[in-house]
Image (cartoon, rainbow, N blue to C red; front, side, top):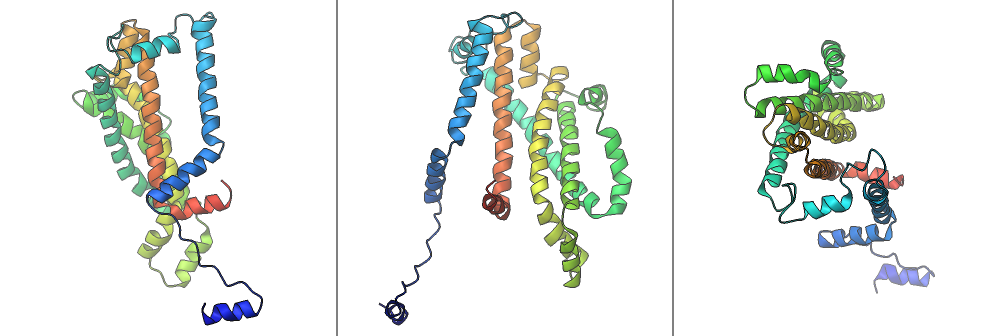
Length: 301
């Protein structure tokens, strides 16, 4: 025992314990998994999904209520979705199904990248500089309420082929959400941070890099989660009008050909893929903003 430990023992005090090491790597994953299992969140999620499936089955297949009897129920959809020989042509075993998913995901990735590349810098500048905001904000607020479907004829006229008009429409819808949320993030930063940086002699570029960008990150990633969802439903609308592959094209072609099961399969697949893309953006945001995650955890949120 060390001299300090002997002195503490003689004084009737317990020696200070060494700080516990925080788990890392696989240990951290196992800790988070065990913590998640002990929390009520996964069980509430399963209960909500089960309740939705039961209500869906009761409306369409159980009671066959009016206006629901023509909609395929969950048993019909799952049996065709998981069948090697689907009755209506679409299942997890048909190559065309994955072709539709791949094309839509590729278009979303390109559109989301372009919207982020253009929208985040513009939003930062709009929130930081009143002059830039005065020039650009009226234009954005004029164009933003225009529905994406109204842009379809112009997109087809401006761009050739099937691919570019669809990507343009998804980029446009995602761009507005990204830009405005980024601008609001900069405007939400406490003015005292700017005054403190000025008192310390920081230059404008240093203020922008160390105050504006970190302070706006929570709003930026919130806007990115919104924008990826906006990009998905605008993409589907564009694929219904101008497209040869994609989940939107699958939904519309199934409706035109009066095959309802592939239509619902396309809708459910769209929901799962959209949820996964939003979760991926949220995960990246949490990884880049550990300080913000810890602050929310201390608040019990």
